[in-house]
Image (cartoon, rainbow, N blue to C red; front, side, top):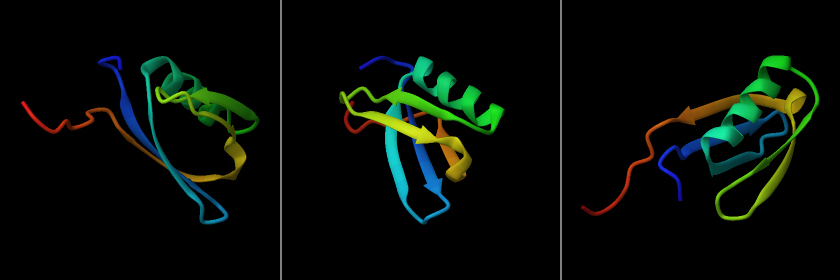
Amino acid sequence: MADDVSRVELGFDSGLIVITKLEGGEWAKLEAALDAGTGVVKIAAPDATTYHVDVSKIGYVKHEAHVGRVGF
């Protein structure tokens, strides 16, 4: 897993919440789509999960740039 992985929480208008980790390039794609305000963006998580997100349905986004790690 790359060092630039961040935790992202997407809250949708329907009440669904999706929590995943995204690498820097995938976060940049999502952020650009959010700035545009419309459309569907395809993002891939490091665990090989792919999401197709309609950004017009998102109610909030929580982005944590520093993902804590357990251990030393």
